[in-house]
Length: 525
Image 1 (tube, rainbow, N blue to C red):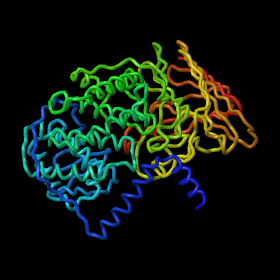
Image 2 (image 1 turned 180 degrees about the vertical axis):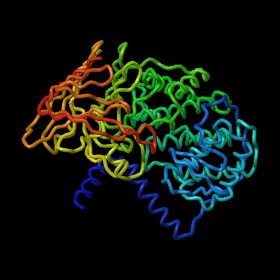
Image 3 (image 1 turned 120 degrees about the vertical axis):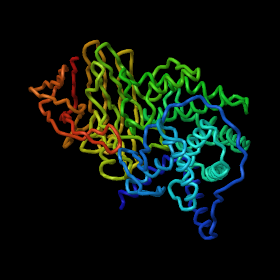
Image 4 (image 1 turned 90 degrees about the vertical axis):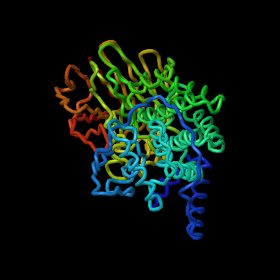
């Protein structure tokens, strides 16, 4: 009990006042509304305006006749869709109510209209789908679909208008981060579709404030997930598409959005591997966000081009030579007040050789609060060093972080970076320093453990991509065409589950390396 209270306390201390105050406000308001038998109005008289949009990036195909596949789980409804279906968890239900499938390829307009009508007919019984996050994604998807097909149906428009005012009454100030930014993007779409000045003023205010806060100087999204960066970038591009092609408001918002898109594109291209993959750092996985190449093509059609940036504030660094690409994390966990998508992975890295993955992040398979989620966020699931089986940062509860490792020193040049974090200082009085030196034909990784190591177990991990089987010969490890010299006599091979997508696990191998005060690994490529 004491440990849980301590974790909660160490988590809350990082929250912003607005998050805490809105949590209490929404909690008390909802209790009062329940007593008063308050219900939202699900139809609001509306006037809509035709929007012109150039074609966007198609959604992943998730609708299949009467079935839906999200997060690699397929379910087929017998007749009527149950919009509250929750057998596969809340995130699956969320995806069902996002209506991304409206904009997938090879789905008929009539099927889409039937699904929208079904949702509206059941709206007074819908639970998760009327939370603010699904409302804002659904709003953008409905508007894109209706505009693309030149559909004007009073039933749909009045329902959508009412949903936007429910969203406006429940903006996610208690969460902030990508949730509040998604609220803002959607409000802008709603404002243009209904030409509603009130929705517009709130959207504009939030976009100006949140883009300034959430997009770092080097262009990275501040939650430090390459996948969420791709999602936030496509939203910015969608808003550029909206404003450029519809002359309703003429102000500085378009200029701001283009400027942010340019540096976000620059950051994304920097940390994308040549084969188009992103590193699966923090909460990142495949087949959720638009790919980097899709985003590049879409941005070019909008007349938006990337700005050349230098990786800095996001904490990521990339070293690339003719035979390999190395991306490392020498930064802090994402914003202190919203680290829900962060992992305990300081000094983690991914290595691609000859365009294919060799050493990888173990990935993301679930958002459910369970043992698998805890394992995937832990230090031992990343290519870094763990001390006494403790995480560098105290990840817990699915989306919580208590104490977190901080970078206290960093030095770098064109082919070298060296940093120190204090994640083990409070528990063990230990500092961990790691350096990466990138040569044309080899990479040298050195770890330094500073502190009293009596009765201390220090372990380094290297996780290999599925299909790669390491062979140990003394202090040499052979993986494909790469030789790794490791100055340790205690190297063991174990199996782990690699997660390239939600709910998809593939058996692969990792090295567990015991060390004392120092460890040097030399990767000959």
